[in-house]
Length: 376
Image (tube, rainbow, N blue to C red; front, top):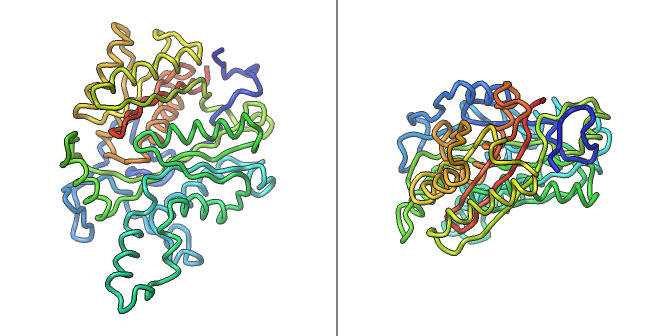
C-alpha cells in the first residue's frame, strides 16, 4: 500500500527526515539543491594543483580540505573519503536535531556505501611497502585508511553512533543498496534510526583505474569525467520523526534489485526491477512524477532508457540526469540521484508525487527505488 506523508500517515512507514550532501556544488544540502534545480554544470577543468590523471575535467568538491573542515585534532592521517563522510554526517546530525547521537547513541546506526574505500590510500600504502627499505617500514597510522569500512567506522566514532555499522559496496547501485539495507535494519528493530548513503573520493589513482577499466575489455563504457561526493539520509519511522519534530521529506515506498548475466539482458532487468518496485509500492506508472535514471551512457545507458521508455510509453515524466552535471561519482552515484529526487520534492517540483530512481551497473545488476517526495 502506498504511504501518504500527511499527518495521518502510517507511523511505522519509513521516511527520510533529514539529508546532507558534499558535492561538486559545495558542502551542504542547500548548495546541492540550488545547483541541481538550476541544472548548473559542476564539472570543471583541472588546474596546476589538481592532477586529474587521464581526464581533462572532473566534478571535484571545491576547496575541500579535511583539516580545514574538521579541525586538526584526529585528522592527521584521515583520507579524503573518510573526511567527506565524517563532514557530511556532521552536517546531517546538526540540522536533524534531537533524538540522535547525543541523546540515544545506541539507537542510531550507519550504513555507508563505497566503491573500494580510499583507492589513493590503498595504492600509497602498498607503494610504501614495496619501495621502503623493508616491507614493514610503513606508517601504521595510515593502515586504517586501506580497509573498506574505514569511512563508516570513523564516522560512527567521530559522532558517537553506537548502533549497527555497515559498509556496502555494489557498484553504481551502492546508494540504493545501502538504503535498502538500512530499511531492513529498521524493520527488524535492530535500531531506531539510520544514517545511510554513500561516499566516493576523486584521486589520480582512482581516475586511472576507472579509465583503464572502462576503455578496455569486451564491454567498453563511455569514459566521461569522474566526480566525487557524499550523500547521507536520516531514515526512521514516520512516528519517530514526528515525535522529534522532524518533517518527512520523502517516504520509501518500494525497491527491487535484479541481476543479469550479460549486457544484452540489462533492459529486461531494469524493466523487471521497475515493475516489481512499483507493484510493491502500489503505484501506477502514470502516477510517477519524476524519473532519476543512472544516465550512464553507452550500451547500458541506452538499455536503461529503452526499458523506461517501454514502461512509461506516452507518459513522459521529467527526468533528472545528474551525471551530466556532477560527473560519474562511482559508488556514490545512486545516493546523489536519491538526493536529487529529495531536492526536487523540496522545491515543490512534483511535491507529494512519486519519484522513481533507477540504476544499472556493468557488473550485472539493476535496481529501482520508489519514493514519495515532498509534502502532498
